[in-house]
Amino acid sequence: MQKTFTDQMGREITINFPPKRIISIVPSQTELLFDLGLNQEIIGLTKFCIHPIEKFATRTKVGGTKKLNIDLIKDLKPDLIIGNKEENTQGDIEELAEYFPVWMSDIFTLDNATKAIAAIGALVDREPEASYLNHLISAGFNDLKTLALQHHIEKKVAYLIWRKPYMAAGKNTFIDDILLTNGMMNVIKEDRYPIVTLEQLKTSSCELILLSSEPYPFREKHIEEIQSAIPGVKIILVDGEMFSWYGSRLVKAVQYFFEFQKQLY
Image 1 (spheres, one colour):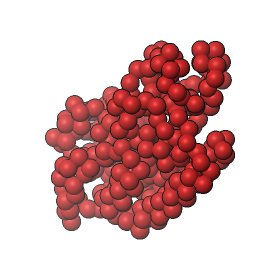
Image 2 (cartoon, rainbow, N blue to C red):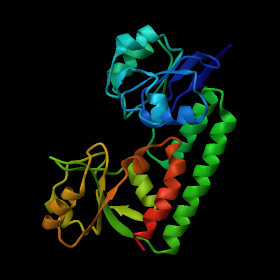
Image 3 (cartoon, one colour):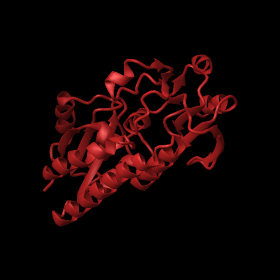
Image 4 (cartoon, helix red, strand yellow):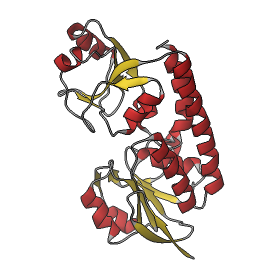
């Protein structure tokens, strides 16, 4: 049977329902699909879709999120491709959409993320499973917001994602929304992922700098480097997947942030 769905970019796609040959080209959404129970249906994923690792090892890799192997994808003949506006390139998506149904997420907030989970659940015939995940995520993050208020966590923070040059998560990003949910006020006012200097951070009233594990793999030595330039600020290494993956990883993120907030009391 054929069904029509509207993605988060307002695009309509019609698929053979339920889909049997799915390619996911976004790591967090690949993990979500596996957690929804689609073990047989996922035939292709990117080289960055590493969770769960045992499933990653047995699936065809179709390139990177921003450099897909279009010819290989065509050979696999998917009946559904699931991507994301930010993670994937417009040119790749437009080319793939000429041949296959491509459903796109567009996520800036936790609310966008839970809506995407619900929509993907409907898309792949796993609505009850998606609803259960959303129940856990919504309840957990509501509790985290309450805890942040109770403990008066009001930290001014910068979240760095890259080095040479330094780049930070700014406004209109999923990371910014996750920070706010946990009582942290982003000192970066520019949209998206601007380049910043340590001098800018030094004069921004920043109390806390978070160094992400991805896409740049910050390490302990980078704490020393930044601390020498900004001696009065607290610097913490953080798990980038918890701050930026917007699929079922958010269930694990609840426990992560429960422990993380204790460092900020």
